[in-house]
Image (cartoon, rainbow over all chains, first blue to last red; front, side, top):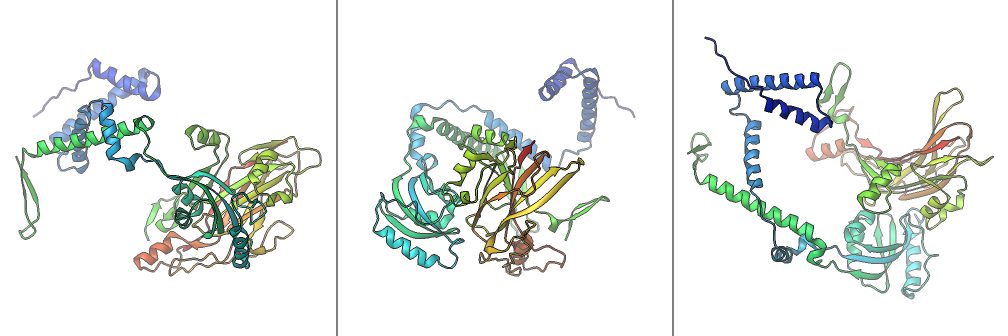
Length: 257
Length: 234
């Protein structure tokens, strides 16, 4: 028995292939390239039809996941309406941690290098400490301590930036310090540091206008997740789902419609 | 002990592989534009993973005292070009000098040494390369040929996958002048910063899973940073 199947190389399909090519190559395909695209499409179609007839699309994890993904895209495409200013403001107010700016700290330091003072750092540190405890912010400390490659002045630095420069210990210790006087020493992987914190600003919740794109993005994403969940719930309702417990012969999930 | 790649050209065992590391960029601002500009002018370096800070400047007028300055980068930019930059038109009778500084990763291992690798095109048209140790920790001697042959040692305890920063230096800075400069030959200079030995991922895994690795498996490593070169054109 011989069967004949029609494979369509319609004009619309051919134009489609050409457009796809042009999107990648920024020019239309030449004649040879186009013939290649058509031939490849025919090959696709032949194998796809035969494969489906042979049941190759069943019990394939990758195909199942792709179909699920396409269904989830459908949920995404259900358009979420543009939020109003009231909705955005409410979202901002109820999710402050997502939008709060980081705290900032401005300080200068006197650095004692563990490398340069391998044997004397403890006594050097006591000596510098006793000088600084009598000093105030106006004292010239440029002659004290050692050069630090990243400098002595730090303006408006966040805790996360401090951690990346000095390590977490340093960042934690400085977080607990007062402003307006020399304190320390605190240690880091580099040595010891005396710090004079001149300013601390806490990370405020910015006004909506300053963070509108971020708030809109987060709000839209939250709505999208809700829509997906609703879609799944409504589809799932159509099924009777039975899950066998391990006490029965084989633990298996059986789904019937 | 499985091969990661096995072909008739080569076999690469799983334990031989290692992660690629990080790229670092000296940008004027933390913006896309500034970072891209920095990449375009090649003011970049890379590391095998730890976050060392590396500065490298080349010029005709750096002096030894510049290494003690509180703002070495300011001197670097004023009197020379940064990593990735170009030098040419050598003033008569002068050799290029380089200001180089490195700071260890704040939670990483100490540094063993800083090297400058010079490459040049000889008169015969053949490429040549030479490694100079320009700064070494612990006051070890650098020989007249520019190499320090004293090893920094190792504190690695392979069985426990630990090390201590009781050797090496947290930071180094120096000025180095090319002792064999020929202004007629094209050349490049780049910096390599090498850490003291630390346990390799194979040692951490062996400890965690409680297994004994075969003798041929490398268990320690020396992490490093390497910069874009500074290019000299006659």
